[in-house]
Length: 151
Image 1 (cartoon, rainbow, N blue to C red):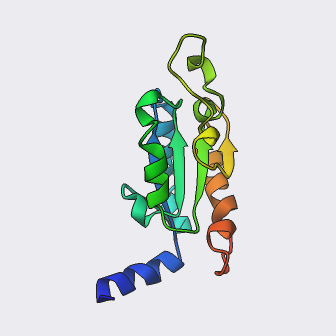
Image 2: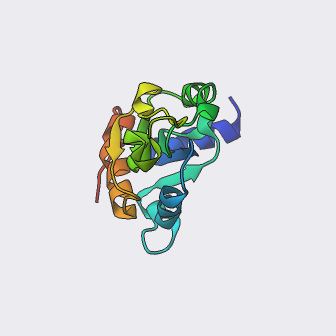
């Protein structure tokens, strides 16, 4: 194993790595997740880092109503995340389809029917503090062998 991989593993043991995927949203929840990165909420102060690469993630945040374009993409993306892993449904759309799930539409909620969801954060869109609370609440599940202290 290389030096770079050893450094990555050491950092991973002491922080939470999050990836998020939009499976068909109006971008309301996307804006709230990005607000978590802004100075007001600053999730990095809690040791939470956002990645685009699912292979470096511990937690997958799913936003949006499940559309047919994700039928063959979401499960392979979920399987790329190393164990232990959890998924959080952010907003009403991945939970129920919200206003997009009407007869005759191509929306197939809930996302929990397609990948295992450990927590749901309802709201249209939910507040950044609620998203942060869900991620921190699942931290002990991700780090079973490592003591995590929530400040």
